[in-house]
Image 1 (cartoon, rainbow, N blue to C red):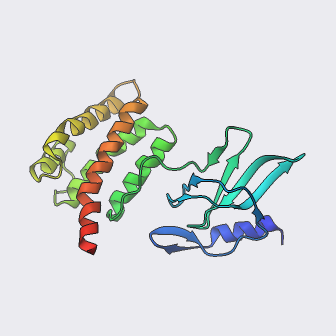
Image 2 (image 1 turned 180 degrees about the vertical axis):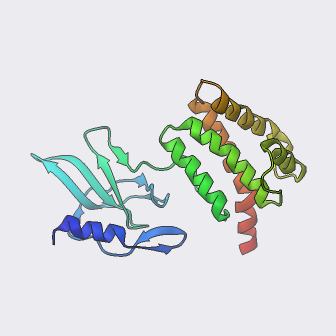
Image 3 (image 1 turned 90 degrees about the horizontal axis):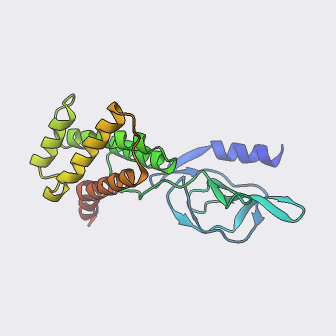
Length: 211
């Protein structure tokens, strides 16, 4: 059996551990290479492994595959193209203690941002706010405005955060009904606000509950 076939088997057999997908197995015939510091797209950890696989031609490295020491999953670097990382790391930061459905939408937003899909990310931002409202006790099937009013009345959206929610509403209307796409700066600002909101609503209470 070839090494690449063994690698594929190792890649497809997985187990869940510590909230991330961790590969269950051992990579075969890995090479020792210069350490490479990067953010793993699979588990969000900042790592610096020194083992993996090298694609070499006439003594020059064309590509490298590093194995994350945290989740044991591979990341490919295209050395001839300004060290392009595949898969690229997700935009923004991982938030702890999120409900499953809200974490799923937030992760999808981060994936959109990583692939420059800013309009899609902003549309998902509206969905995320609606999901937060329902998770906080609002009825399902209501309008976006109803959910925003609910979040404000419950104090989930801080007083100084109303302008940001309005920006999400307006950006979503532009993405849905008008031709111009959402620009990168606006999308990044919206995701930064969402990250702040999720930390206040879920992560900080979750941390306190563990103490």
